[in-house]
Length: 282
Length: 285
Ligand SMILES: Nc1ncnc2c1ncn2[C@@H]1O[C@H](COP(=O)(O)OP(=O)(O)OP(=O)(O)O)[C@@H](O)[C@H]1O
Ligand SMILES: [Mg+2]
Image (spheres, each protein chain N blue to C red):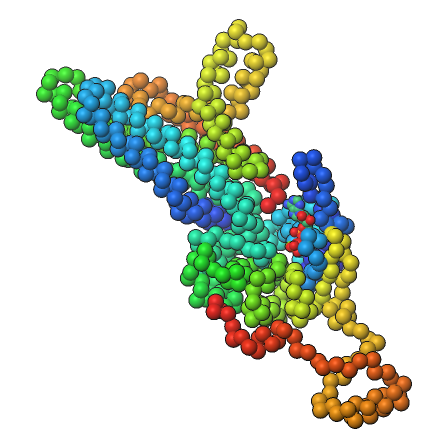
């Protein structure tokens, strides 16, 4: 089984490498990583504002927010752009005339993009982790001098959050890939992609509403139920400040639950994308 | 469907839906073709008659509306068929941040060339397309002719049995297209089948063994080039130092035998021959 899959995996690997090279050479990637880094670093200014105990929380919120926001934009635009560029420039024609199946082509694209996003998340999280850790050390010393309670901080939490965000961006990428295989134009894919990301971010609202069925008529109940099944709950990945600053507040199993349900949607979206891509005229 | 055919197309029809109302545009209309192995086959026709569409369907890049196709005995669009086929798309465009050599390497890997043979296969393909030197430059810097030649190199790097070229000489100067003609012949000499589309009829006539002509998606003619073109009822005699007296004598002698001279003109060399005599070659070569 594994042996017969080896050539296929190799092809996916080479396609992923090609996608990775293409993506990291784009100015857009460099631009967003610089913007994200600037946002993380700018929270450095807050130390002069004397937030006292809330300062770490402020830095963390700002940094995680930047990672979340620019990461989402990168995943959305880069995924749609790379797929449409490949089709519009007819480079896909050359690749698909090789013994490369369309599923392998899509999986290669996905893997290449996901690795780029991993790089993005890793660089920004490391930067944020270093900043938080440095400020935390200062605050601990300060607290000792003034005999106050020192704030809590977990560097490990920053990296668990990085892993979660990387997974979240993987789910977003597979979602945008699916939309891009159906959409005719880049713009349409980006607009619909952005709307689905926002909807995924708000999906927990639909889930909560479902717990109070008394307030719903059957039709909206059915609609909400469908929407909450079609879309992943993207909000469950955003527990960065809790993971980093107050690990005791994180419910046990929250990280693995998010990864498990995210992984389910990721695989389902990729599967559907490969089905719709089979019929697409190149 | 004979097993000897490199490509067998039966009853191929393709309708495109155009516009929002989904009007149908018939690009290929009930096309039947048998392309024998080991020959150079030319597909001709005016713009928009469905040549590129036919080639894309043969390669499995576009799904036919109806019809049956097989490549080298395999159903098209299977991995085994593509492993044995090389394709140069029309107006090719490649990832421009790669160098020519990197592109050919990528294509070799995707086509399943064994790692031990990778280097030699890549260099051989580049040499055949005379792109060995230019192979170190990024594709963004290539001229049209170089794009065509690197496209040729990526199509043949895995030593395919069947090579499909969509307008390989579009935008290439006559010296370059003569070089491409030579590459095509060297492929045939190795026993490969070459299928090409072109609007340069003069070149098609020189390069191809067989041709097919399409018009509005239909096949209007198919056959061996020399059979299709020969006019068996007329002959050409080329003469040097023809004086008026000699001409009169020759005409009289022919008339005496019942033959009839219909015209006497100077043979013209083709513009292409003149061009190639005067010009040494492209700077890219
Ligand atoms: N994706 C498509 N959608 C709609 N119509 C298409 C599509 N591709 C091709 N056509 C139409 O099908 C017809 C045949 O096109 P094709 O590209 O096969 O012509 P061709 O013979 O290769 O022409 P040329 O010599 O200009 O390259 C044209 O009328 C074209 O407009
Ligand atoms: Mg064409």
